[in-house]
Image 1: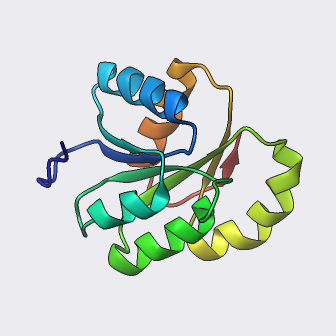
Image 2 (image 1 turned 90 degrees about the vertical axis):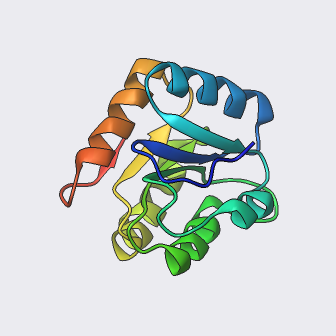
Length: 138
């Protein structure tokens, strides 16, 4: 069930790998985050409201809608929401995209899967604390 009240450290996770989404959700909740996880971007879109989430954790490569497309739609609804992209693809594949598109969108982090939970938690906490600064493509 989705709780529509705004809370601190609230994350919307969208990754088409259902098992991974569930594992990340459980691990992040064990580390003090509140997480709504979806494996279909279109369903996640229907739950998204302005001010509801502090951060989006989005897989870049998903069927039917990329994480970048999803984020663009979210920014139309909520200009303040932060984002971290995550991918299992080779990072060099996205480096050029990241250098060109991410600054325009205000994206600062690209995280590579697999990732240790403690590293994921650190990246998310760092992003939540950040205002502006250097891009971080892990």
